[in-house]
Length: 362
Image (cartoon, rainbow, N blue to C red; front, side, top):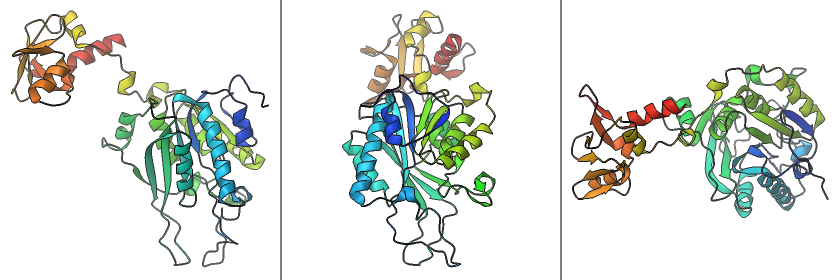
């Protein structure tokens, strides 16, 4: 029987088997899991470039399994352990190639995870296909999932939109491989064969966590997850079975200064804003009973009631219900639909009153 710790000590790298380590931790204790598990490349011999140099990551011991059944068993074990550790609103990201990501996807669904997106990381500078027998493998796939179907997962939609020049972030990400000064090296050689670019983890962590959240990476490798988590004001815990990689990751993260501008790291969303009922606007005298509301094109009109409802014709209800009714629509955001005239006679959306009251709450 595994003796369990009462809490997870954050901001450290643990050397060991991820399944055994995770089994000792309390359930519902991490906010997000990012996993870059072994690929199970299943290649015989070495893969050589035309200049006869060896392609890294093909023959590594950590990527060798007896067969698909052994790989599936390993995958089921670590995904089960990770799901137990996720908080109810937490999410898991896993990245892989065509060798393993489809097997992982099936097991995720079998275990009860709820897939939210698959994201394609399209590489701007992929390795050419030197054998000339296939298309150039220019992407990897990330699967993002909630702990279960009913989980209310966190998604920092506005942060992703801001990151994408005020356009909704798509599920295909064009990013370069890890190269240049970011690529860790030891004695002039790559320190880790599959080091991921920080830009990729920046999107993952920023999209799904809040400042102060705990991010778990059970295959820590060179520590990219921890490095980005630290830069974004999140906590991390990494598990790595190779002591050399663990030391490399610790040194890398230790060189990153603590970020003091916590307010600039926050990614507030609509769920974080205080709820302001329309009745509060009336109570505070920002709108008075009898005031007229209209849509931006002035096709419809309604009058404000003392109890925070509005009325038009023979129908009375909330700003949302009446907005939907006059448009014969299934739903309506009344804060955005209804307008009124300010003290200077200029048209303004009634949402300005909600924002004013929210500012006073903060």
